[in-house]
Amino acid sequence: MSDSIKVEGKIERKGLGPGTWALVSNSGETYELHKAPKELQKAGLAVKIEGQIRKDVMTIAMIGPVLEVKQFELVD
Image 1: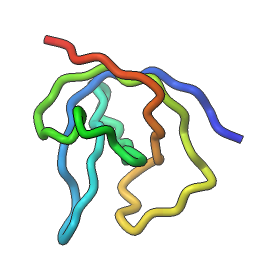
Image 2: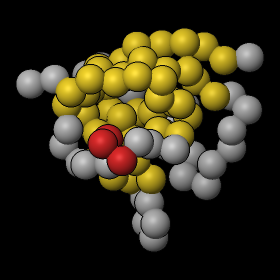
Image 3: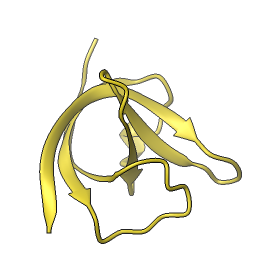
Image 4: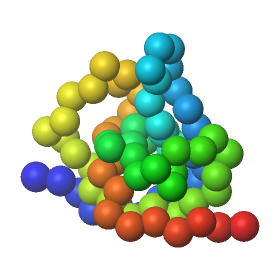
């Protein structure tokens, strides 16, 4: 089961080695992006993301809930 959410925030690169892409929401919550689209792989981007929290996905980074991106838009 997964929860659908909409989050607005900034893209950040987290972790050592290969690292992982994350969304830090405007309220301070960090979400690890699951298979982040190429368009979102740029630190500092301001975005709105609609997606699902994936409780069935385990990651090495473990920086926050895993967010699978369904759709997104860039914001100014």
